[in-house]
Length: 158
Length: 135
Image 1 (tube, rainbow over the protein chains, first blue to last red):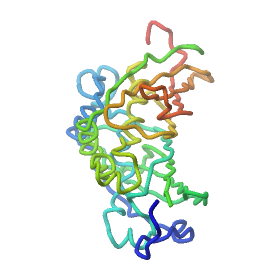
Image 2 (cartoon, each protein chain N blue to C red; image 1 turned 120 degrees about the vertical axis):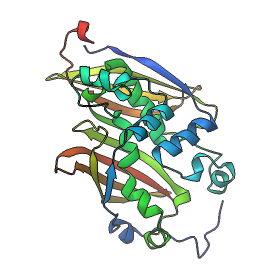
Image 3 (tube, rainbow over the protein chains, first blue to last red; image 1 turned 120 degrees about the horizontal axis):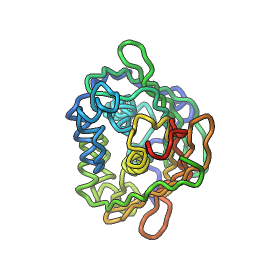
Image 4 (tube, chains in turn red, brown; image 1 turned 90 degrees about the vertical axis):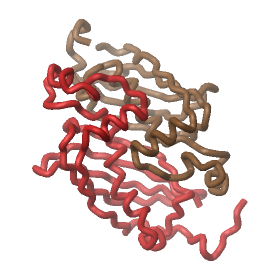
């Protein structure tokens, strides 16, 4: 397999445990929910038709639960898009995999929601062929109501 | 809803267009999900699908079944094995417990060879005590 090169970088557990991510503000749009449900092939009318959603007691269409994938990981994605952050992080994005994901859905997400997304590192676990990075997501709306909580485990292959 | 109830299976074939569309919708543009050469250089056997897309299918199996997706309280997935282009993914699930109106549903997602792509998955759904005629 690949040999270590000086520029490849080595995962540094202390650096990983101290990683910080930007707080992201995200406004939910009807179009983005539509794009998401089309991409996964979801046909549920609650996610597409405001009249059906209102008849079910919602103010508007609701996003499917895993629409969270669009906004909950944004602090991490924004960080990965910053070459300086990546260089400091000791993470090689090409060797990064998603190991586990948990979401708790507290309030349905609807178009027009202004979300505030925060991500913090909870745990770094050293394994022979990889490091497991566990991080918690908190998503609130702009009135301070909790929308969602999440926990993700990222697999950083050596 | 009662213990032993089955979630109707959901099956989806994964093509490059599926992954490109999902990348655009989710804004997860990691090239391991659409660029064969990049994926191989990263030590993978080829392009692999987004874990979160497979989790989306697990979620969809549940929401197609309960219809009111706002009843889903939590969802947990372990990404056990990568999936690839042309794979056919199937999600199945079963109610394994009901406590205080909250149903716990055990779920898995396998490929066409029966390999678990997502295992040890679970969802919790509220209003489990409503009558069957409401489901």
